[in-house]
Length: 247
Picture 1 (cartoon, rainbow, N blue to C red):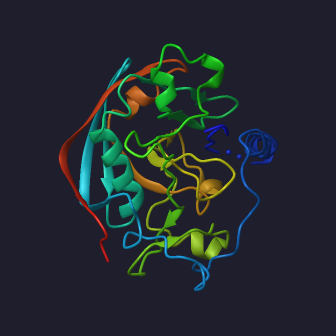
Picture 2: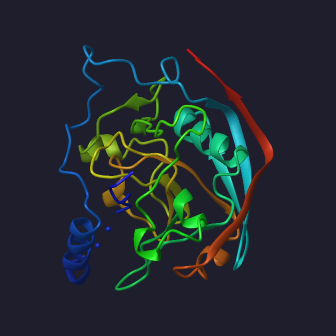
């Protein structure tokens, strides 16, 4: 895929470090303030997606080299993003992949994984974090748009970052400790397969990255994961109904 997927970073003593993390993790410039996508732009939601959307919820069990972790995905707040993850789990994309980025210093930040190339022993470690899902049927790289839902709105917004503090406080899913979100490159609409778990509340990422669930069991395991540890197997153990072209 060529470009390294990024997750993102805080307070008087922490502000400098967080700004450094934002730069080194290649955050995109701030997007438009809270607003829906341009009415003239092509539709980006479930009705237009070629990937399935999650109806309801799903629980995904991950066996890692440090122990079991369960993730609860929210198909009401993030149907496209959660559906993409469930679809990739079903395809076995995450099996044998490596947690290639773990940032705990100077403050707890994220545990990141999900690069399919990291499961290939022929791929150098230096290239972990540069890959995403390529559909074997079409040979095309999968990309999904940034998906953010505000409380009280019937549907998520797609394609634009939300930077207004008033709006980000209304997000249905925020970066609390244990939040599960999609990593991406500087393009807000470039998420594919890589994901991260927030090791503490990261409000500076709200509105910039798509949260689609959270760790429901095993956060103490996530706290033990080190860079280079493996995601041995992922599977859906509850829910996980996928639908196409959901209006």
